[in-house]
Image (cartoon, rainbow, N blue to C red; front, side, top):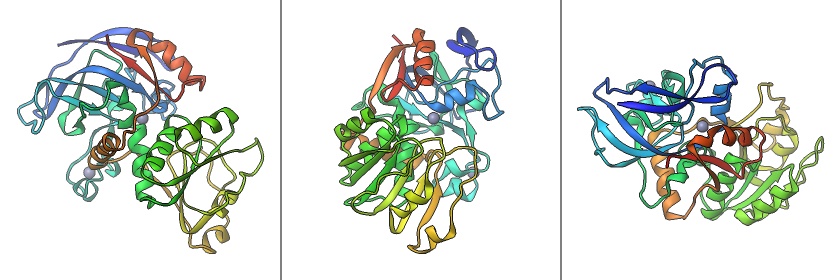
Length: 334
Ligand SMILES: [Zn+2]
Ligand SMILES: [Zn+2]
């Protein structure tokens, strides 16, 4: 099959139309006609080769919703015509203890879709069917950001101990942070949002946060009225970690899904005195993606997105780079 995609021919370049052949290779593979695809900050990092693992021409896009058009003989549980969702992960070894415990995202041999192949800014995509999950017909195709941004924050909050009836903090209200506010608040938690933007503070309260604090540049975050059980950081910049740790309750957890390249400076006492923890969390395994989608349907959670036609992908990327999208951009095939 001939696919039409949008590719960067070199680091940081504008995307240009590109044609390429997609053919089933391994018996586990499927071909998917792309309905829509979210734009994640990892797409920008890959376009800019920030992680030194990009190869060009690079077709980004890893929050894909589409329909199966062809499948290999070993593909089980997916039918031609079925709607599927595909996130960051393209493959894993499937035999290590992490894979066997449903944490394929922690596998040492985990591979990213747009690291090893062509992504979802295209008419079609070829993927391992084991990493394509049934995508509910009840969700719009524009809900693709649940597949990377959504599972990233949902899995992080769950593994940090979020259940219901708790006090949850979220730092940042972008693509990740707004989904964290939605999941945590709809599941019956009291959410406190920390942002540097007064406008986003208002938006957070509309999304379900009980309060939103504006953190002035260079200042410590304001103290919430009660200590938090879980605090999720979604912004890639250094923060006043000591102040934030002090707003965590006993046994509270600071969980990072984003961070800068700099080492964290944490005084021992901030952790010791209330048995606090710090953890990181990358995307989510297949079971977590299923759970994220299931919870999204049952609790009416969907990303707030701006939709662009696929042919306007460069304008969409530019708006993401300028941090002007509220809160996630999605490109859609006609
Ligand atoms: Zn992503
Ligand atoms: Zn593995």
